Image (cartoon, rainbow, N blue to C red; front, side):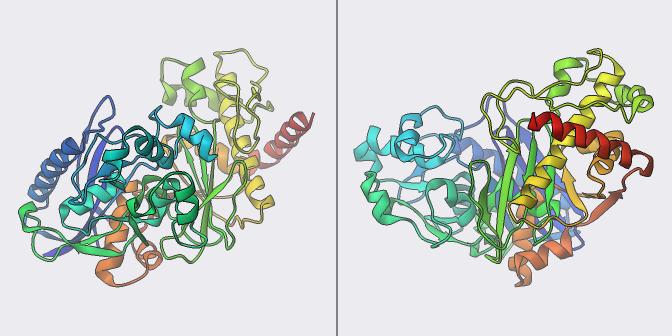
Length: 449
């Protein structure tokens, strides 16, 4: 029987569980979607029970589960009692409650701490009987892990000070929050117990502390040590890097590596694939890619944004970007939009470098935009750097890597190096590099003006 590691990804739109082999292959997967987002912890548990049963049947006698972990959405919190039982539905990172408290605390409204203060102020008696938890913490405790424990990636947006590695008790008290209502914080991958027999997963299945879905995705994407940078191109463009120093700016904030060996600064641009449906609502992107090929390089520049406001690499709530000077809806216009997003990606990487963050080759990349061979070639050529695509760049796999580190008694980084597999590299197109260098120079000139 071959050992497998389970990774559970509890997101706002569904739950996914994967089984990862010791060779880094996904050998089983079960998932369920929900719409609108599910905030009922009871349904989370029922869904997990069903998915684990489905996955166990799929694995059969060939594989034995030895360890598991979980990831969940950053900024989402819930109140549990001393037994770990939820007292309310969870409050999503996007929940409007807590906006006034966020202003009072001087933090983004997406931080869970703002809703925790709202809970304390709105229901003071119930608050005094509750403990703060994150979705992954809740699932892992219900599986048999220690209660009132979280990991340092989830804890960040609940107010945890990563530099001192402690809750700022005096400051929390000044805000009217009881520090005793906050969980113990451990590193992702820390063993929290074993799975209870009622789950039917086998004996001595290790439970390890999890991490946020964003950090789990970075781990699975392969960019988890100094010099490595990953970009995720979906509706927006997300940058994740590694640094010896903590970096906190208006547009960059840092997580702590699971092994506490370096910092993980990250940022996100509103530029990305979300611009394409705006001008090409049919969604026939493979056909559009074929039609655009003849116009590349276009010689055009753009900073395509769906609506005004940008957060990185330009920080300006009124910046509207600019579109390519071509007939809207034409193949050339489509090609220039792809190039424009690549220009923003290059500017983002240069902005990271200007902050002292090392950016080495290749650039690790994930996201829906990486499914387009044409766009990958454009981006590699615009960056004049190779891109690396990994086989399984999903957060659930990152959670499984945490589980593997506990089973193997090694660092999370060692487990990642052993399990993350590169699917292929995309090299710059030699004939495109110089034209794109000229276009990028014109792009920079336009921005400086």
